[in-house]
Length: 120
Image 1 (spheres, rainbow, N blue to C red):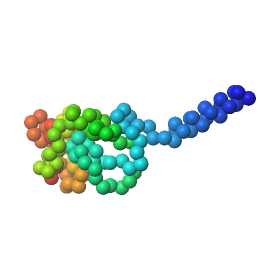
Image 2: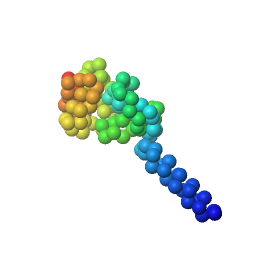
Image 3: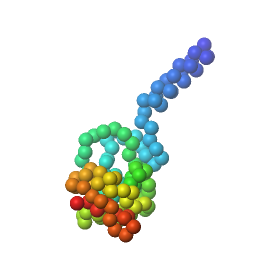
Image 4: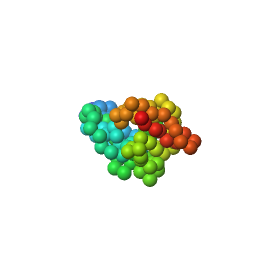
């Protein structure tokens, strides 16, 4: 009888874990992911409501999709079309995609050591 109860409890735990979204460090499961919660934007934007993992308060996604403390993000200069991210601009493709997601036509890595993503 004890083994059967233990087995059922284990199955229920496994189902609960499998059905929940796995979030990385400094992330929490939310009903509506804020896609503008990045080092470059640091805003709340209106997008479709999709469940998933979002950064915990005070943390923002860097170019690599990792939630890092705000103090490690570079300055956000969205009004000037520059998006400075902690760790530099990894490549033009990711920069372009990030700019398009923020409502711009595109973007490319610029500046000293190509550390900034310039949106246009």
